[in-house]
Every structure is written in C-alpha cells, then in structure tokens.
Image (cartoon, rainbow, N blue to C red):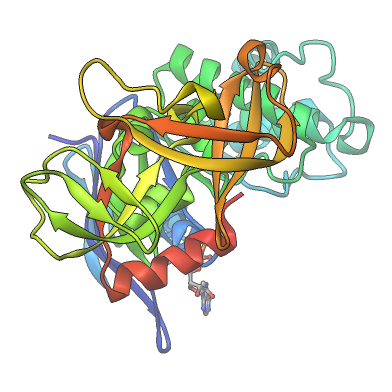
Length: 376
Ligand SMILES: Nc1ncnc2c1ncn2[C@@H]1O[C@H](COP(=O)(O)OP(=O)(O)OP(=O)(O)O)[C@@H](O)[C@H]1O
C-alpha cells in the first residue's frame, strides 16, 4: 500500500478545473516530483496535501488514514516555499526553533535539535545570523531546516530553488536530495524545470492541464515518453509530424522524409503520429561518407547543411538544415564534433530504435503547443 495516496483528487476554481481526477500513490521514502508548465495544477496539488486548500472531489490518505478534511496544523507535513518565508526579525536558530516552541518541546531538546539541523544543512556556524545576513541559498537551507524541525512525515517543496541563481540551484538541489535520502523522508517536489526534475527524483509525474500525463522514473520518461506532451516538455528532441504508413514494417512518412522505425503493435496503419528522436541519438557524417548503415538494421539517413555549431563542453550541438522548413539537432561528443564546421554539407543518421512514435490527436497537438511554449 502507498504511504501517501491521492485518490481522484479534483479542485475547481470557478470555471477552471485546476486539478482533474488525479490518482497518485507515493511510497514511503520516495522523492516524487510534480513537473509541468505554469498553471498545470502542481501547486494546487501540494496545497491540498498540506491542507491549505480543500479538494472538491477525491481523498488524501496518509499511512492508511484519511486526512482529506484534517486542518493544515494537524497534518504532519513540512513545507518549503519558493520565497524562503523566514521570519525576518528572528535569527536562523530562532526560525528553526519556532515550530518546536509552538509544540512546547523542552528548551534543551530544541537547542540540541537546532544544532543538529544547522549541521545537516551545512550552516553550523550561522545560527545567530538574521535572514538579511544570509545569501538566498543559505536562507533556503534554513527554510529547509525549519520544515524538518517538526519531524514531518512528508516534506513538501514548492519550487524551492527558482529564486536562486543557476550555480546555487544545482548545489542546493543536490543537498536537498542528499538530506532527503539520509532521512529517508517522503518528499513531493514541485518544479517546472525538467532538468531539475530528472536530476533529483525517484519518480516524476509529468502534468498538463490538471492531469498526469505520465508517472515514471526519470530515465523512463526521457527514453520512453508515452505522450507527445511528455516527449516535448522533457528534454530536447527532434520532432516530425507524419503518418504511420505501415505499423508492421515500421514505416513512417513526413512531408519530405521516410522514417524507418520499429514495428508498432499499438498503432494502426495511416494513423497520424509524431516521430521523436533525441539529439544524442543522431550521428553526423561527412557528406561523402554515406549514410552510416547500422549492423542491426537500416539507419535513417538524411542529408543537410550545418547552420549552427554550438560547443557545449563535453558535446557539441549541431543544427542541421534538412529542408526549407526543418532543422535537425545532433549532439555529438566534442572530440568528434571538431571535424565539422558551419556551412558544411553533412549526412545525419539514426537507428530505427531511436525513433519514438507517438499518436498525434487533436488534444496531443494542443498540449504539444503548450509544452513547446513552456519548455525550459
Ligand atoms: N486561488 C485561486 N483562485 C482562482 N484560480 C486559481 C487559484 N489558484 C490557482 N488557480 C488556477 O488554477 C490553475 C492551476 O494553478 P497552480 O498554481 O496549481 O498551477 P502551477 O502548475 O503550480 O503553476 P505555477 O508553476 O505557475 O505556480 C491555474 O489556471 C490557476 O490560475
């Protein structure tokens, strides 16, 4: 049985259905991320779990208890917000102690726990400082320590890193993950940043328009997205609108290309599809070298011209123009990328296995636009 279970959870604000029949089982000690674009309902879910918002339908079970209608103050949850929300007139230590004092815990115990928590978040020396004497990242560490002080059963984090600069964001997300694992704490983390979600989560719920599009491990979501939205929102991808000519033979056609894909047992002939290929699956060859046939199957091979070359350290990203309206992205290890220059005629190849073939109906098309507009 799941430790925390959201069952048929629905929340409406007037005409807007912010959260639509969400079913989400979360295991004890799991780091579960709600990932999606602005307005998809992530924060509303978190606020319902915390007890700040009451669902219109559905229930929330914690360790078998129905807590749907329990007031926020009686729920064993710790929350960290985007805007640190520390008390400005209290020192770091006093901020951390606050919840324990409200619970009238013994003074000595509070002091000891504060010291432990300051160590845990790596700020052992800074207990006497006021929030304005701490950097944004340090303030967020104190906010985390404060949330943990009351020994919550579930830690809720609402975009805790979005106010910080890029470098601090990466180091603090690693810290949050380390602490969560050390304490074996169940956590729900809200973010619109797919890289962050992939980096820290045990599982990710990809959300769009109040619904869960896919609930899976990060690798699965990246390698095997189930919907056009998940494929578009998570990671960079090459995408082609096409038609599945033969599901059995694995043959797709777009306006200008034919694609060899794996046989598709779940799709029908002549179905509209989106073909998705990750940039690191695309190989680059000098034009005269030929298509780069694979030993285990026919490679897809497309000619083009390099129109942009971006060195990104370990790999180099090439934007290759393949016809008047399309560009394909290839991420090539930088050692290999050295031999290719802007304006050069090249050939691109990728294996049938590298092609995800996803059904493209009207709803998927609409969601694809949202994902493209919001992808980071
Ligand atoms: N108190 C409210 N009153 C009216 N509408 C609301 C309220 N709170 C949220 N909404 C609406 O519900 C939908 C979901 O909002 P929510 O804040 O949960 O999304 P989100 O995915 O967390 O977005 P963001 O990343 O921008 O915070 C949005 O359309 C939002 O405008």
